[in-house]
Image 1: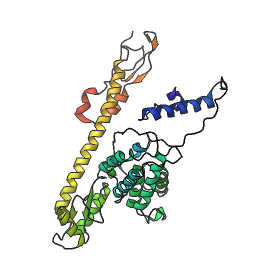
Image 2: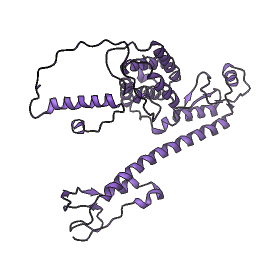
Image 3: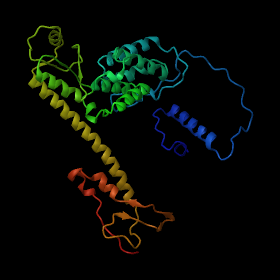
Image 4: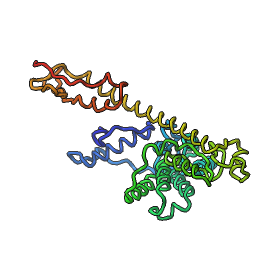
Length: 357
């Protein structure tokens, strides 16, 4: 009934809250679209005085992270507008961890996992956590958050948009997305997320370093202003310099690379990210192919008279075990496997006709 009411399957990860939210959607749908008016079969119960609680009584289950985002984190939490006092020490630790995670304007996978673990100890609602996320987003962009977003650079707008999306700030992300669309700017390409977890340092004063910076930013890497322990390496043409950035890198044991070595290191990171992206696409394609193959195995043998020589459409108006078989276009399989090379060549749907039955 939930699919009939909403048009999709329930995908709530938290079982208890998920069932309650599904029942709410079904009940609202019945109230609006029931063929006859709904009514109570008995008098309503006496109103129960709400119990005042200081902490959120629900400890949410951990959710598996699939990307550097805490959007999945907030979904299982209660979305009550009534604030809870919660565990103040745990809330303070979560706020500090959140500020440290988004200080560079990015959110890595490890940072998202650490936030997920700490958020379950706060005993507050998802609404309160989202408010903390908004404050952290404003702190990460202190000047740009209140400025005219149309005057910002393309890379800065994309950075703000991706962080708002990762923190589940849907209102902010929609506003920034509207600004990007109004300026006819293309949305962030898939490769703009490849190196979101990479934080590097690049010194100034050389054309090769400028090219390296632009390439790193185009793939989503964060260029650190201050050298901290989260920086992977520092690219410079003066490795023996004694300024604060070079001294910090030496103190923390961060590799100091020449432009050539830094370019090789960056290219290697890009290759690894591209391979992981290809593996994800291959897994999705395998899932689609498995579904199509399963449906093909259920098809009846034969087709009515009239199928053309080059027809790839299997039609059946016959009845199999009392059930009418739907039409299926085998060209779907060809489209799914096109361009995938020899790996899926054995699954290509041949063009064939069927004899008269």
